[in-house]
Each structure stands twice: as structure tokens, then as C-alpha cells.
Length: 394
Image 1 (tube, rainbow, N blue to C red):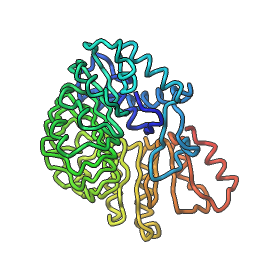
Image 2 (cartoon, rainbow, N blue to C red):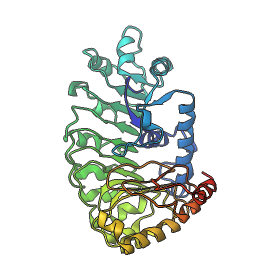
Image 3 (tube, rainbow, N blue to C red):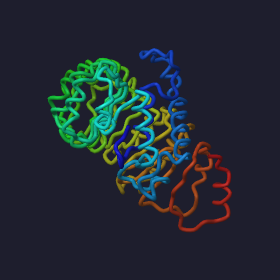
Image 4 (cartoon, helix red, strand yellow):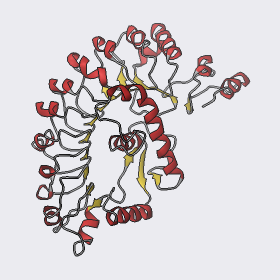
């Protein structure tokens, strides 16, 4: 249901899968079964990632850049796109079976499309003079997933007719306005919302009405602060604040962090919020102004699987910080990815340190049993280094 050439990253794609119930979640699971999600989210996400890998192996998805496989580009997560031939075939089949419609298939089917046709999934990415009229004659009351991107104009905007959406992806929609958020906040069934790469500058207080929202992506927007009402979203599992103007998480967000399991940020976390954390993914935390005790507090969150931090050059050379970091890493038994640098970027199942050089492979790396990707710079590779690397099972 993507336009040709559309780029997406794995984490957000699999999160949409989960919220639509397409992978990893039992069909009879109630939307508010928080205990199930809390106990099994790590396994569910892992299953979704495995399914994603299977699709890659079938050449349905391909990387958008040569270095994408190893995710060496630190400013952005690895970008993927659908194979053009497969995209055309799948889009056609989805429309034929009534599973979903793209703007191109809607227009091409003008002469034969049943005006009472139910569109479970709808992707609008190609502006067309006939599109608005087509949508007016379609039953959108059963639409559960909507994607709008590109130059789709406001006259084609169907947001006032899709009250029961579960997934709403508006990434890259050029004509999204702050006022549209008021309409979106009435979609009480919404579980996934992305306004990534849009001109949105604020979230309205009415965001609290999305009571079962589980994933919120406001990255790459002009948003500079989060409304206090956001803490009412007690089911929110994933929050992406990267590349926004948000400088620090508010201290009164403790209740919100109770439910978060994936937090993607490029900002500071107040000390008082650490006691509320129970995250599996935390990226990217700015430690440049934090004391060494911050890492000591994080040490109690042994469930962390993915962690990315940024710290300053003086922290790299001070013994207190180095010892705190080393003790912290040793306590993270489930750690799959650790990135330490001064830039952006995070990828699963990897360890990467940028701008640093090791005399030898650190002994403690041998204890990271789940590690699947290792990228460090060595002055010289010795035989003992090879032995340590040889014992990694990932």
C-alpha cells in the first residue's frame, strides 16, 4: 500500500503490523490486555522482526542504500522500499480482493468499482482530480488503516469520515495542518499515529482522548514541547521524539513512562523519571550534562535490549564515567544493541562505538551473549581478541 519509491524503517513498519494484528498478536487478544503486552512484548517484537527478515529474504523488500544492511548511517535508521514489481502486483491484488486501495488503483477502477465498496485499508499518495469524488462515494466507516503522504490536498482529506481508524500514518503529508489534529483526536480507536516529517508544530490537549494509543511518532516535526495531557495515555508503548525541538522530557511524565517500552529521543531525561522506566529500547539519551550516578541509576533496568547514548569528550576520559558505563553494560543481561557516540543512530543487535579506538577487544564484550553485530576500532588485532570474538554466539 506504499507509493513507488516510498521509504520506511523496520521499527515503525513492524509496529504498524502489530497494531493491525497482522503479526505476533493472537486474534482474540483484547485491545486493553495490558498484562499480555507487558509480559510478551519483547517476544512479539522479535517475531515481527523475524517476519520482516523473511520478507527481505524473499526480495519483497530491498534496502534503499548499500550500507543499509549494517545500518552504518548514524543520522537515520535503515531505510527500506518495496520491490517495484512486487508493489504493483500486491497493490493490484489487494484492490481486487477488497483488502486495500491505493489512490492509483481507485482512479483506475473508476468504471467498475462498486460505490458501496468497503476499503479496510486506504493509501492516498498520488493527487488526482477524480480522487475526491471517488472517496465521497465510498463507504469509509469500516476503514481501519489510512496512509496519506505527498501532495494530497485538503479537499481530498477524508479524516472526518474515518472515525474508527486503528492505524493512521501521515508521514510526509505536505498539507497536514495543526488544526487537523483536533479531528484526529476524535478517533478513539486509534492505536498507531505518525505525523513524522510534517509541518505540525504542536499537539493539542485533546490528545488525551486517544486513550488506547500505543504508538506515537512525532519525529522530524516542529513540535517544541509536549502537552501535560499526554501523560493520560496510559497504554502508550512507543514514543518517537527524534529530530524535534523538544529539549527535555517534563518531570511530570512519570505516569506516561510507566507504560512506555520503546522511547526514541535525542534529549535529556530528568533524574526523577528513572524510577518509572521499564524500557526495552531507549535511544538516544544525551548524557553530556549528566553525572556518573545517572548510569548507576540506569543499571537497575536490566531488561534493556537496545540502548543508544551520547556523551561528551570529557566524560570519555574521566574514570568515574568509564567505570559507571562498564558496570552498567555488565548488568544488562538482555542487551542486544549498544551505541555510544556523539551523533544519532541506533540499530538492533549491535554494539558500536564511534570516534573511539580500543587497544584491544574489551574482556566484557565476551559476556554479551545476545550480541549479533559488533563495530569497534582496534589499534591492532591480537590472538586473544580473536578468542573473545569467537565465543560470541549471536
